Length: 315
Image (tube, rainbow, N blue to C red; front, side):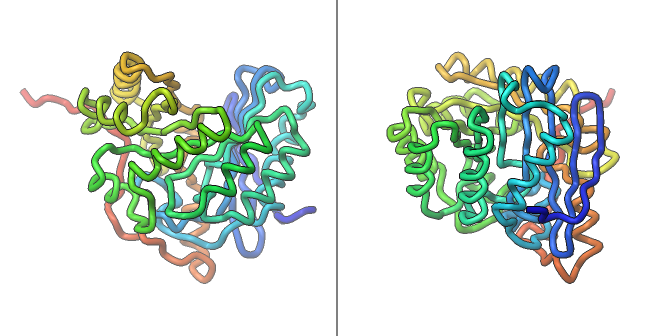
């Protein structure tokens, strides 16, 4: 089923960003190869057009148009595979991530429909759901994850201080950190797989007490860790820098010492095509150009969080 009327491609080395548009929505998907599509293919797709959650480092954090249908989510993946010109059955490591734009757990109908179609179409693909943890029902996803072992789950934490997290993620109806931990541990017990927490490294939240807090909240027996860089949402502002990469690397080492399995997420394509998480340069312009379709989210007008930069000492 063709659900988007236009697809635009932006290519940078091993990263391709695909922009989808129709009369009522815009979406982005990002396609990565490591180093070839046959060896490892990663697709990050959108579950919403814009987002109501309002995360302050995310380019979709100011406006929300609507949730995407299961067919619209599914089509993004199919188009990425078509662009890659690869036989999906021949991909050694194939990962589909619901994490480009939108909050998946606020779009159960679209997410569930897409998962069922994608699991049937690509049985060798891992299906990772990345959520900030809205206060909704997670039992359906837990039981679906038992039936479909390719499903993985990740929660965006980013702060160990609840007040700082509220400032970063202003959406009100969300789980506490303790609530996220309970949901994740139940999912782990039921599926036999560990969920991930995702944590963006910044200057203020990568000290030893933060590592201890994460260990207490998310025991390594049940959880794995993803440490991410903050991808700059403003077009023209460089995001990748040695200072931010060192923050992520050093904090990852702390978590390794606390017993976590840790992966560092520093996506390619940040500074040329906006291929990193939350950059969404084209989407930001579309939202401003279509005020009749895009309404302000709870994040609109709040201070923007930028990628951390090294401070230059004044002599």
